[in-house]
Length: 209
Image (cartoon, rainbow, N blue to C red; front, side, top):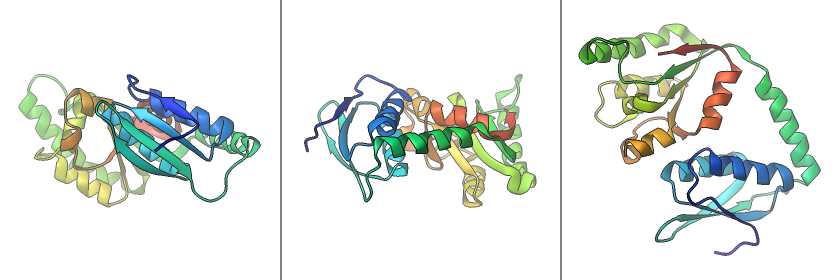
C-alpha cells in the first residue's frame, strides 16, 4: 500500500494519533491517507475514529508498526464542508446531555481497607446500576478499573449485561496496554483520553468510583 499523505504516529501513545488524524480530516478531508502506529491502543482507537468519519481501512503489519490505509467511501468533503461539520460537532459536544449519567471507574474495588471487601462492593455496585434506568449512558474504565472488563474477572458478567442493555462501556486503551491486558478485554470499546474527556463534558451527571 502507498499514499501521498502519511501520518507517522510511531512512538505516540493515545490520544496523540487520534488527534493527528482528526486534525487532518477536519482541515483537508483527504480522499485517502496512511497512518503508521506502533501502539495497540492507538491502532484500535484510530480504526474506530476513521470508521466514524466514513473511511474504510486496510491494515498491513510491518515488523515494528501497523500501517492503516484509509480511503473515504462516497462523498469527499471539501475543506469548507469539513470545517462546518467540525464546528457543528463542537457545538454539540459543548451542550451537556442533561438527563444522562456517566460512571467513571478507576479501580477494581470501592474504598480502602480491604481489597476483598472492595471487590464485593464493586460487584454489588455494578449489579445495582441498572436501577438508574435509561439515564445511565456510559461507563468509563481507567487505570485498574480496566481489569473489570477482562476475561475471568468476577465483574465481567455484570458489565456485559449492562452493555447488552445499551450502556456504552469505554475501556482505556492506554491502561490496557500498560497492564498488558489488550488481548484479555472481553467487553466494551477500546477508548482514548479524548473520548473520556468528551464523555465527562457531555454528561449531565458524573459518578466517580
